Image (cartoon, rainbow over all chains, first blue to last red; front, side, top):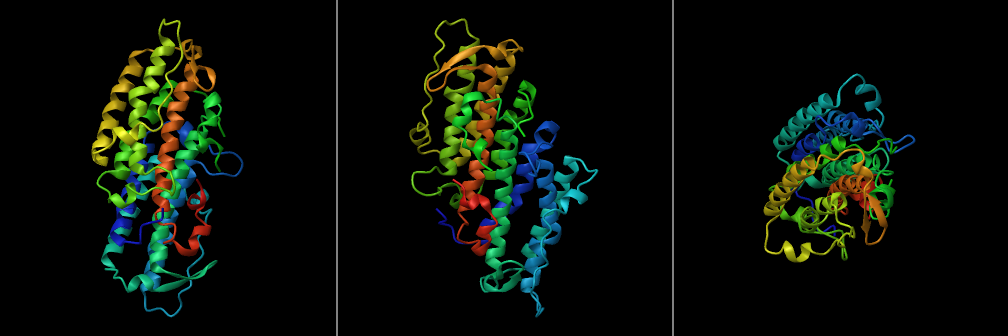
Length: 178
Length: 178
């Protein structure tokens, strides 16, 4: 496992597939699947899509540009994990899905235009928690973060049937995961 | 959480979306993402799609038909969790994805034709491990099983970048899950 080394092309393969993957899974689906959470303070599917939008607006490409800039000051602005609770208000899931797709498409365009070379991947910025991180770590995390939230969305939805599966709960590990 | 009661319509919403969700995520992607596993005896993405195909051929609809049949003998045939290691041999991921979509489309057609009513949902069959289970539990499990494997596929792929994300591994729970 973990056999892959970072590759910009392989990374973009995932980044450009995420919006259509989410649209295929979620567009026009009953709200029962997308407005319930996993209990307590956990997120709904609707919350997760808002979170992905906030990342497109404030995180991944902004931090990439800062790392590659001639700025001496390289501190990342801390990411707001709760911004979507305000910014998604009054919107439909369909609106969010298409907003995410639009922002992602534009960000991939920006990413390609930066013509990132192998030396650039070692350039660094300062993360609020971790300190110095480099560009290949940031871009790898963008990819893994997409996949993490795809996985989370499928889990949130599966858990809506946790009682309904009866004894099969024993075979479905996802229903016992957090 | 787990607020949803079983509904055939809500279930079909997921079942009919799974093939296109997987095609959006996986079609034409580099093999690096789909032929590596999570270490040890774990499955690759390629293995998981073969497993989903085997379910379409031998499990969900077959068991549904058995439950609804007039047969006195209601024991399910045990499911072979390793069948795909033979049956997927020599095939491409693209072939498997489209084979899965074709089988699923046909199975949803069969499911609709059964005109399952609310009394049918309480009818039972005999599971090799759990003993008596009813139709609504079986169909709920079909749905949760799809979502479980979507979640697993995203996790297998994310783990390919486990080393590459550097310190962010701390924020990405998926990279530490099994």
